[in-house]
Image (cartoon, rainbow, N blue to C red; front, side, top):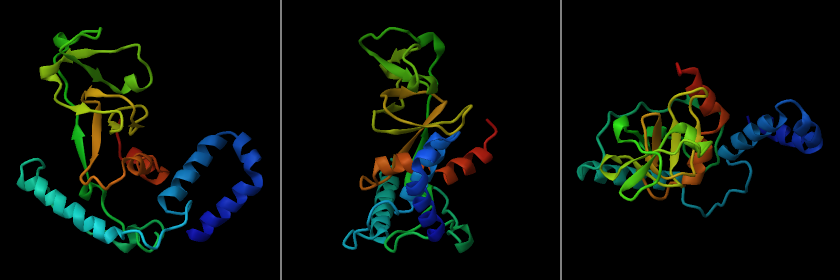
Length: 214
């Protein structure tokens, strides 16, 4: 896999202008860059950086604390990752982990429509839907007491319905409806920017979309 990526980079450097101008060229370039970034191939690795194994232990401790405090529901242990599931090699200090062991997914809430208003007003919170990430034409607000799913601009939101399904979104704030869910890192050391781009990586996108009915 490493040789394939090295060859792809060399080919891009040699024929970048042609690739950029080709049909879907920008999309393909973006997909390749995301894929290489998730494999740690775009920047040199720091040998002094904390290994992933240590961070995973911290995440597990934080997860247990949240469960004990009633802030996180316990879940069934996920199966171990088998060698035949690994699509490529990672840098030495990295480790494979199932996403649900380090991230919680929080579904949205759907308030009654008779509580909707369409102009901002004191005591109301913006109710965000998938379409709002593309346009401000349909702003909706609900009473604060119904705003049970708060989120901020830096949070990572996932579109549950489509087309297209599995949109990875961010940049708004308010409370979100059932068409969205929030991907919330369990531990503060997990970089939200990395998670935002990881969820857009072609292998993950294609896998989820293939299993989706909408």
